[in-house]
Length: 246
Image (spheres, rainbow, N blue to C red):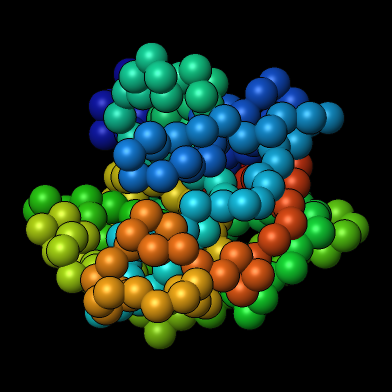
């Protein structure tokens, strides 16, 4: 007889593979804070994220800065009706892969045409602990987007020097903050994302106030020519958790 502890451990040692052959598999894009998730384009067994992208200002200085959210996946919980309509059935949570991403190995097959404008495509892991949502960006292992298919590997190492903590803008510290990387990686219970960071936010014309206390494209217009443009196609993502054999 298999104990519950052994079964739980076995679940957490699987390898997650999403080929997008049968839809987005739980992956989605983002409209904005008010309207939430949006569907990704799905074609020829790929999901596609295309500009213009929303400017995520939740982590404006004194936080780490601004970013675009290209691909997102919830790692726990039961999605509501709208979430399922947007992203399809979440094959990660259905597969009970668990939320311990410490030293998990990501392999991505992707391509695109991207005017990055000094940003990098990065893995973001987010977890909520003691009521605070903490995001860590794997800035030490950027992902390259080229016009040809490439397969790239990154590892969610337990080393804060390889990551950047997002922190919070001035008025979101009640929800966003800083929890140690070790805690977050051991329980990434919110989501994982691929994002473009950092964005160069340039107000278009004079503004009344501190641009970091205001919200770009909501409180003031910005120069879109300073932001990334293009598209990224994701053909496959594989996450091998430590101890997984396939």
